[in-house]
Length: 80
Image 1 (cartoon, one colour):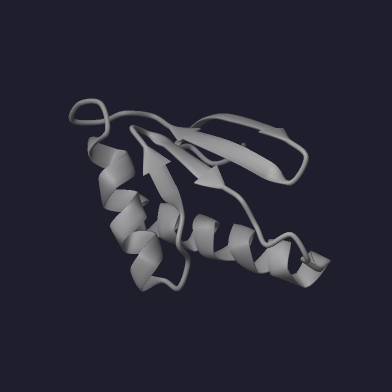
Image 2 (cartoon, rainbow, N blue to C red):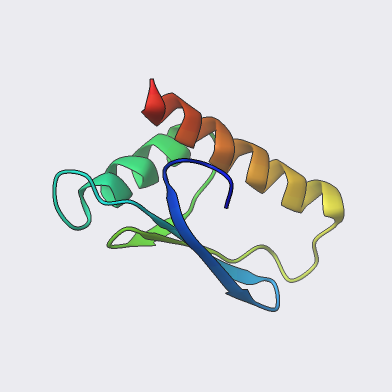
């Protein structure tokens, strides 16, 4: 939630949604981020400008940390 591209973070249980600020129109940034995250080793489904994070049912803290690290890395790359 502390990243400048993130508009809102919400969740229930282990599932979360990360909404990013739209840039060139609804869904444009979300589509770009979905592709960039895939190439950074993370598959996040974006619906419009909201990424849906749904980790494995059996996850350890290290798995969640890896997801967040790759998500943040991709957001940082989009800023540059």
